[in-house]
Length: 293
Image (cartoon, rainbow, N blue to C red):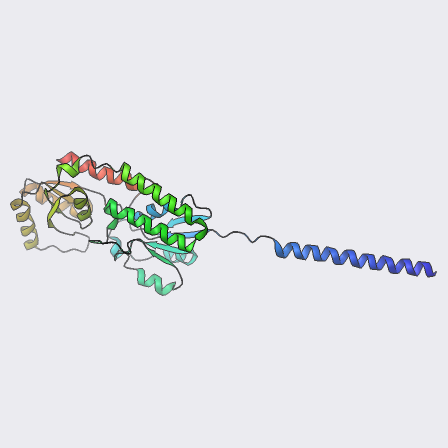
């Protein structure tokens, strides 16, 4: 009987030890397993900024780039954030903006999401207007600013950001084809019907002698039209750069009353979101200019 009691006690002790060991094992296993990695969601404010950021971040681990919805027509200056935009921003880890006054809604974003990091891609750049990306040189500087900003926020991918930015800038510099226009229009007088094309003229070494920034809210007086036409005639303007949606009516008038050629160009506000879209659209613009000369 005594032996049976001792055996029973030993079995109980062994059982307690096994249960305790198993409990400890599963507790440690559960509490030491790796936490699932969180994907870094980078929101961008407009198509050109999206293209720049996509090329900087596309090889980085655990990073997704998404663009805010854009207006089908109208200027980005006057764009109002949609409910979907605000929902997306609530999930974002960082917002990359063009800057230079382009995002008129920025104050609303800061107010709604005061802790959301914002990378201003135009910070420190000497700009003429907010359509900074229309200058290939300034666009490349924006790309590098984005890489620097993301590197501070996501240091684990810093080397990738920097290498991708350098590679993309080299691609832009090598593949954008001005088709000899920087010689054809160097020193020539041109006119523009959209402020974005100040950068186009600068890139080609042309002089802007008349400008009229047209958009859906711009009310142009008869006097302004008369002065613009007179300048085009007096300054022997060879070509006028216009954006079709807002410059078409004025373009027809210029064609009727002057010898200048009107060419309609893209501002890259809209696109198909392919990674090389910036280059293809700029090359299309330069091809269009070449064709009218």
